[in-house]
Amino acid sequence: MKPSVCLLTAYNSVQQPLAALTAPSLQAFARAHGYTVQTDYRDDWERPRGWIKIEAIRAVLEDNFDFVLWVDVDAIVLRRDVDVRTVAIDGASLQMAWHGPETSKIEAENFVPHFNSGVMLIRVGDWSRDFFKRVWEAGQLPHHWSDQATIHHLLGYDECLGLGPNRPEEPDRIRLARLDTIWNSAPGLAVAPDAIIHHYAGISNPSTRLRLVEADVNTAPLREGASPSLRQAFADQLSLWREDATMRDWVTAERDSALADTWKLRIERDAARSEMVAIRKSTSWKSTAPLRWGSEIFQRLRGRA
Image (cartoon, rainbow, N blue to C red):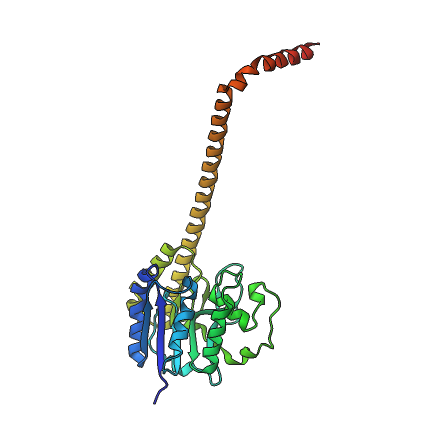
């Protein structure tokens, strides 16, 4: 009998438009391999959006599954020909894709290699229940990676967080293994050839991310029967679209920032003018006018001397 797998994702109402696009691909993947699909959709999560996955994972780890396959809501399954159980490594309780030049084609500047928690294969057991409990209890570190930063810290990967040197002696390391990046390929960021899952991580503009996911989802059926080289060519195009969209977002943000600064200066200038008008209309300004006139005349006479 095959080990049981819970394919898990979770989101809130802000992320619901993404889920409407990506959930069908998760469901089709689960049907192809006999996984149980669990989708948690609500708005009463205890912590901000980045921590939804930890809360959802901890709950499912209490159920009677052998594995939990977590997939972020901004990820789409493109291929259904590989069962994730075939890549589970004996002795590993947590598998994540390593995004680095030795495993991926890095397409972003100043990229910091790291494990990406957007797709995780978790072996259900005492260690995984305890580990994700400790992640939750440790909470948010001073880093924008949210839960991903805390996971790295507990595993001893502090260097990529800027929190000091790595700690390779960390005992939790022996439970960690790398998941092939075809399971978590990020177009325009860290790309694997002929990916199983495209994960649109690291896109700050929600509208841009939604449009890119929509383009990927809507064209995915056209690529199902295509050759790996053709699928890869289209993935390369998606990376270019992301690069263009990111550049447009940056230009727009810079423009809006400049306009905001200009508007602020105008407000400050107008306020200064209004203040000066009020001063000149005041009784004290009028009463001291002879003194100012006398001072001006004296300065002029000194200049002529």
